[in-house]
Image 1 (cartoon, helix red, strand yellow):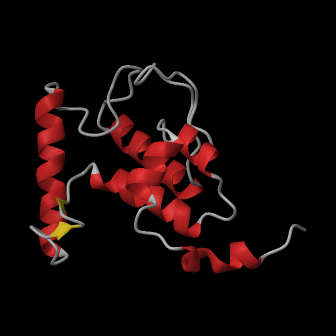
Image 2 (cartoon, rainbow, N blue to C red):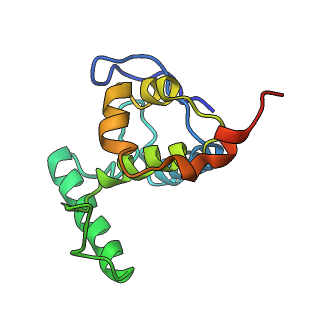
Length: 141
């Protein structure tokens, strides 16, 4: 599913593709925000009532850390780096590499607004050929 074209971000103005469950979450957030009076074109999806966006991001980070604490992994470090909201990007890209059916690196990189080199260096570094043995041994249909 594609997001509606939005404002230019990081010098990109092309739509991105997301998974259907994310669209449902997006639609629920929009409905919830609409009921709260935040339905304007310029209203933010997350924490729209907070006009100081730096503080909003900081607050969301505190919420994320609380979730990690409740899950019993707060304060832990993964691969030598502290888990942050930005860690979810790594998780998303890695999961597409692990579980995406026949995903190719250039498609994934373009959709994530990064390069194949960055995918190889930072996201696929923990993967082994054995993790995708069915793709290696498969035949084209």
